[in-house]
Image: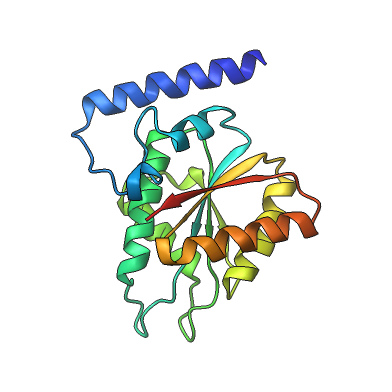
Length: 185
């Protein structure tokens, strides 16, 4: 319990120092749901237990020559804001097949998130999935193995309902007690 309280205090102080030292960032979350603001519901969710609460970013089909689609840029912007505001929460970057390209969607997102200031140690790759159902199945298995209690799912509004349903279904099938919340891009 003391470790969690200490981690929460450190996370709050770190966030406050980042908020004071850095220029204000625009809230890229829909109606504050994906927001990384200090007292937003998603921030409070992450701060409740930083070692067991994760940020999950879902991939999107890359362009033929590795171009990043606009929807993936939006997801990475929200994910980076959350990660920078919550440096003690790990992030699972999920996405596999990129057709004939030699790297996965997760690896492309690693580069995009690094460019946005997210440290490499904060990211964990799930690079085997080729669909939202596979994203959910593989990521839930990882979360269960790591002792997670919950995760924010970062994806676009048109995709959120299906994604949350797939993650909750995967958790039930794997007997994982996980809470999933939306973080809209």
